[in-house]
Each structure stands twice: as structure tokens, then as C-alpha cells.
Image (cartoon, rainbow, N blue to C red; front, side, top):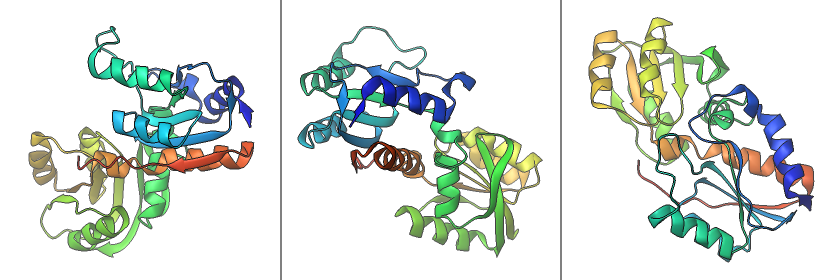
Length: 248
């Protein structure tokens, strides 16, 4: 068991939230009035389905990567968001959310854990904390596509740039398709992210770099699980990851 605000302070320090200018607030987004935390449910996005599953699991805290109050959103708590927050409050479930700090963390982050899952060697940040690079043993684009599919349980969308072998690969989870330009400038052979835009296809072909869109949700399931497991071990909590699957 741990006090809610002690847990938040620990996570904020661990993830270095003060170092990020993010699109949303990181940390405690909803205090439902329950101070003693024993059971944590983690998931990627604080959707209605995930919240209802957390209620069924009798969670005291919902830990997510995608929470609420995004920059530019309307402020009123109505409609879908109002219903989600009512369900959290009625269920007595606090909401803790970490976005970019959870992407970037060198041990628990989405990028680190994705690289480890894919078996990429010498994983490290490229020129910033959010884009990573590593090494492969001269794989073909088809080989890397199979590796990604086996690890994530879904086929990636591959935009191949000729038959260039892949020895150096970059990646950034989620909606990071624009970082393909940075990856190409660094001389990488391939780049992996979650989403793809219409322009990404042309950029990959014209820059001569293979591109893999592996799924926003699929590439960001790992960090929140790693953080949840870490908290469970440190504070002797019950932790369960619930996957509200999303094909995007």
C-alpha cells in the first residue's frame, strides 16, 4: 500500500516530468478521493472500456500513457470525456497519466522497451530522447517486417525503399512518423514508428529509407506495463495490465 500523492511524487521524479514541455499534464489527472493505493490497473489509453475494466478489477488507480486535457481541447467535461470521468469518480479510481516522459525514459520508456522487444542491439537515443537507434545483422525489409509482426502480434505497413539492407535502424513509438527525416539525415537504413501519414510514403521513397508503421497502440503497450510492474514491486502493489486493443 502507498499514499496516492507519495506515488505521484515518486513517478514524477522517476520520469523527470519537469524536463518536458508536453501536450498534456503529466502526473495525477484525477483525484477520486481514495488516498490508499493497493491495486493498480495500467493501460495505453483511458478509454471508457478500460475504465470499466478497471472498475471490475476494483482498482484504486488507473495508470495510462494517454490521459486527458490535451492542449487545444475544449475545457468542458461533457460528452465522452464527461462520461469517462464520471465513471472514474463513481468507481473511486484515481487517474495517473504519463505521456512524453514515458516515451523517453531510458529503462522503462516505450522506446527502450520496444527496442528490447525487437532484439535491436546497441539501443540508444539518436539526437534527442524521443528518437532511438540501434543495430541489426544486415536484415532485409521483409525480415524486419516479420520480426515486428512476431513481437507485436500485428503486421506492420512497410514502405520499402529498394533492396537496401538494414544494419542501422531508428524508431520512435506512437505518432512519430515525421521523425523519418531525422532518421534519414542520420544515415539510418530504416525507421519504425506507430502511425503513418500520406506524406510519409513519398518521404521514405525519396529519402531512400525503409519505413515501418507498426501501430500507435501496439508500439506503446510496453512502457506503461513496465512502469506498472516497477511500481508494484517497489510499493508491494497489485498490478494488472489491461489491453483495450486498438488496430490503429
